[in-house]
Length: 57
Image (cartoon, rainbow, N blue to C red; front, top):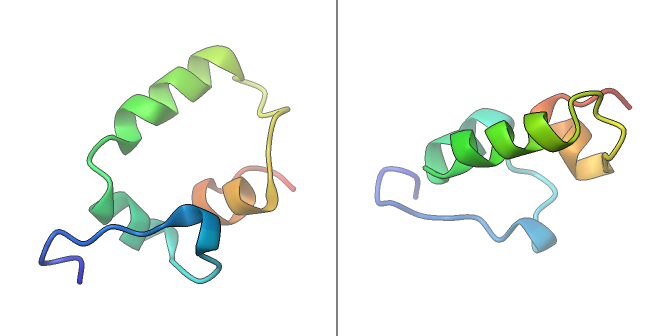
């Protein structure tokens, strides 16, 4: 699926690994840059951000 340009629907996902998501979303670096600027301390987080981006629990 990744090799064919597939995408994941994050609101329904509970299993995708971070490296797979990074391969599927070419906009991820821009999102992470904005997030770093807005919330560098990672005070805004969710179970999904902990799983997908390694945010502290």
